[in-house]
Length: 271
Ligand SMILES: [Zn+2]
Image (cartoon, rainbow, N blue to C red; front, top):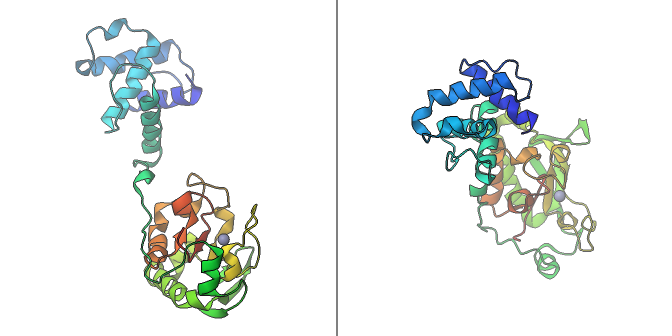
């Protein structure tokens, strides 16, 4: 058993007033004795022959009981470490560290509405609505000041975007400002701007990037790097639910929310 797991067990034993010795991550006599004490306290929920089980099996039983007591689905209390115990243990650690259950991200579904009639991500359709790449650009006067992500001393009050997305982006950013306020916007780094119009091919591809039409925006690229998934990207956190809702209600697509990469990016197309 990994030392990190054993350390969690020892910390739990200490917390319930039992004495496994130091939380050193090593399974030894004191830790096993404390686990026996912990199981004795809970013997009503155990099969009658548990005292004869090997110490390693009792250790897993203790973890399973801790999970069950926290309301985590752990399956049978059988002392065998399978995938369900593995997942339950991760959840237990999260609860012990943060005081709350991890967010069930599999349940999140991005909104799929299209009130502005954004095209799909297809060059002919994009050219038809937005014009040729790099054309049809206007200045968007920002509802709240942004800063260049790579040079935070530089404040910007407008940026170039495609004329067709101007009003929609303006509404989104106005809602962001009304909802979060400037102080919270700064905390959440929703003012760290990473760019809009940029006529270039997609990274690692041969097709035009959505930035080429000025219909994609990047925010806080440093904390939401291209290949990062929701385990690392800051914009995947619940604090950003409303940020994404404002974009999605206008029909914009987040690659983070739909494909779990490029969480900095939002674009006025449907996938
Ligand atoms: Zn982008």
